[in-house]
Image 1: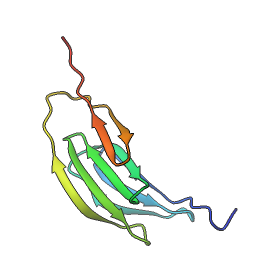
Image 2 (image 1 turned 45 degrees about the vertical axis):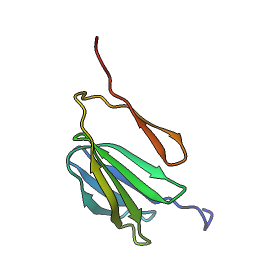
Image 3 (image 1 turned 45 degrees about the horizontal axis):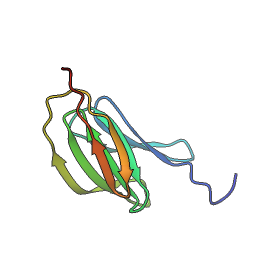
Image 4 (image 1 turned 135 degrees about the vertical axis):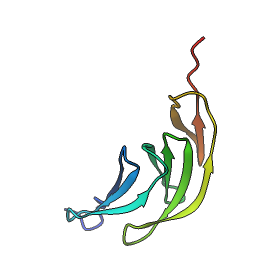
Length: 102
């Protein structure tokens, strides 16, 4: 394995817990989100984790060396839709859509 290879990652759960998993197999709970985690995104340009919950709370979190995360910002948006597809559409720009049934 290359010494520069980073095998650490984060995982979100339906219970709202976000875990840090490191390359030696350890798992650490780093956050209890406001509801089930729908999206867990990495914003590589600023090395942030973006968390979007089923309650449409969107949080930005800075990653620390030890795997812990610290909140940078958090907002709640409103939508009537249960399905809200989310994609990166530019550098630091997310598009969140609502699914409408006509």
